[in-house]
Structures are given as C-alpha cells and as structure tokens.
Length: 251
Image (cartoon, rainbow, N blue to C red; front, side):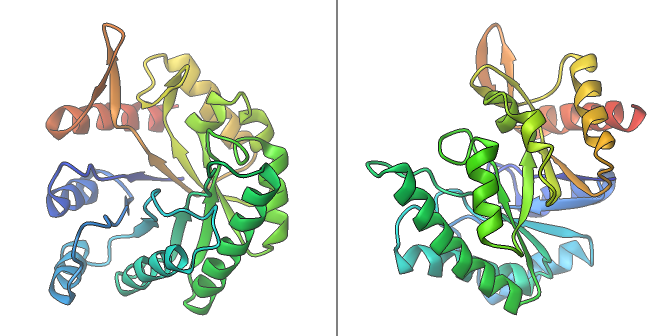
C-alpha cells in the first residue's frame, strides 16, 4: 500500500509538499476556492512536486445537492488545474443539502456527479466519491445506489466517517474502493490520530482482508486534549502523522 499526506490549509503549501516527499508516498491536495491559481503559481507547484504523485480532493463547499450549473463549473475549473498538475485520481464529496427531500438530494447529486465524472473521463482522470457523515450518503444502501447509477465512478472510503455512522463493515463491502482516508473518531469528533493501537490494528486488518493494496491518506487534523477538540498544525501535526505512519507500517 501507498501512504499519503494531506497538507494543512494553515501551512505553506510548498513546505507541506516538501515534507510529504521526504516521508510519504504521495500528497493529496485540496485546491482552495479563495486562492488565485495563476499559471505561474501552478507551474511553481509542479516544480516542487517534480513528478511526486499527487492526488486531488475537491473542496467540500461545492454544493451538488442543487442543479446549479455554477457549482458544476466550479468543480470542473478545479479539475482543469488538477489536470495541469498531473493528477489522475480526484475525490469529491456528495452533498447532503438542506430543505429538500432525500429523493431530490440523491437525484440532484447523481445529476451533478454524472456531469463532473464525464468531464473527468474526457481528461483521463478517475473520479472517486467519498462517504459522508450526514444523510443520505452516510449509509451503504444510499451510497451503493449512487455508485451503481454512475458505473465508472469509484469510491474513497473515509474510515472515520464510516465509523461515526457505524457503517464501516458495510462500506467495506463496496466493490469499487480505490482510495482510503484514514483517521480515528470519538463520537462525532473525527480526523483524529489513533491513540489505541489495537483499534488501529483492527481497522488495518479489515482493509487488508478485503485485499486492498492501493492509496491511503492519513487525514488527521485534530487531537483531543482534556476533552477539548484542538486543531493541529506545524511541527506538532507532522510529528503525530509520522508516528501514526510508523505504527501503520509496523502492523
């Protein structure tokens, strides 16, 4: 398996990429909507990467629960940037929406994802859809329906999200899992490091038991200290991620 690093928004992107190159097999980057990705900036990212594997993660604020062309165009605009950076795997979040029926939310997401997936296919990019914590795409049944309606769509299994909804064992049965986001959760708090080695070992065993041997991103951004949910950044976050990586590789 290959293990990846996800940069922190609060850190310099170039520094984060250099760190990933020293310790991980790839880096997974979320392009920020407030950033101006000029030709020069994109070229500088490519120069720092220097053929290091890059995965894409579309910004989660893109709303696919409405039939809004602008939201789909935003997704495709970011995909064009990822293409320029050499990305071949991109993860997208389906949207839960507000004030709509479950049926309408599912229908609108399928409409948007088909458009985005078609755009990806034309650019030789594999699109992955990630399981969420809010309905309707937090349960395997609805998620399976989504994937079956878009045959070429693959799956990013988010372990922490699946554990929050007690659906991990169900999601592991999906046949199209091609990428994994790995992090711990305690109740509704997730994106945490594993502090219990046995819990981590149990998760890794389940992943290996399904004969998975592809990419896993360590998606860790918080810790619990004295029952407080605290954001990690800088050297402390990097240290914790390296410790987690060492444990995982040793299992």
